[in-house]
Amino acid sequence: MTIIDTPERRQLRELTRAFVIREVLPHLDDWERAGEVPRSLHETAAKLGLLGIGFPESVGGSGGDLLDSIVVTEEIIRSGGSSGLIAALFTHGIALPHMVAAAGARLGGSLGGRLGGERAADDGLIDRYVRPTLGGTMIGALAITEPDGGSDVAGIRTWARREGDHYVVNGSKTYITSGVRADFVTTAVCTDFPGSGELSLLVIEKGTPGFTVGRRLEKLGWHCSDTAELSFVDVRVPVANRIGPEDTGFLAIMQHFAAERLSLATQAYAIAQRCVELAVRWCRDRSTFGRPLASRQLVRHRLAEMHTRTEAARVYVHEVAARVVAGEPVVTEVAMAKNVAVAACDHVVDAALQLHGGYGYLRDAEVERHYRDARILGIGGGTTEIMNEIIAKGMGL
Image (tube, rainbow, N blue to C red; front, side):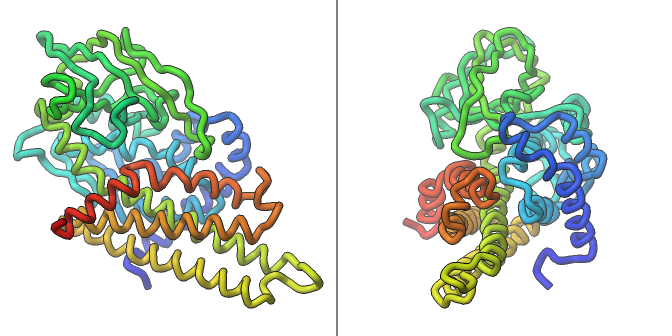
């Protein structure tokens, strides 16, 4: 039995697998070509309780913790779903936690609670945004990255100038997951002067004058996950839409990076695990020169190495996630878990596609989609290089 293997989580796996088989697989190719998933999928997932996993029942969630969220992610990919589907359907996993934590609710096994001992946000944000999103009737996004900022969160230049009971926001964001479909965007803004590092989080609703969604960004992978550029020109946002006290946004963002990075790490080893299964199946069925591929020692050894790397990554990510749930400060370990899982995934998807030969290069091949989708995992949530810098600092370097 593994760290996260319990009777309840086995039931959660079965529920997730049934959801993917019934609601996702018949339509995934169409969604990939359309560039987005339908809003109705959010409602269906919410009714099953999947959308609220990892969020407390007190804010409209289904309960559970980070380990339960990991189970759902694993099973979606292992059942034939995709990392892009997870990005599209579960964007609220990065859009909502700051609101939940600021309102004083404990976020399932993660880093909830009160920021600095204060009541950091009005409970109205929970009723206006969190409950409807977990109920599947709204879609939220998180906007941090800027065109000239990359991983430099402290250097954010989107500026929110206070005018009475409103902020006036000017700036732009890019690479925003679900930015096209989102009804609101949890937005990182500078509340001192641009680039000062004094950040706050504001919830900005679509349709607010001056807030425009720019072009839909075409990507290498994650085709069913819409991505957009956002522009803010003199956008007036009520102070009541601020999450937590002013100038505490940087800390709030950093606190919730652990869950995001472990989610990406989970997607990485889950893709690897799925690709190992696909490759094993292919090598057993595919014959060359009168013999199955799996009968050749070179092929068997390659599959064995792929399986070993995948299992090592999976076990380590599980252990680190369990420590996060226990409240341990494991910033360095989270960075290592992400890099280990991404490295395993990069190796495995490349080897799996190679074993599939020409078929693996076709859009009809599931392994081809995983190959494309995997490339973002070493970039999103902090690049491999940023993770290495965190690890180096943890070593005292």
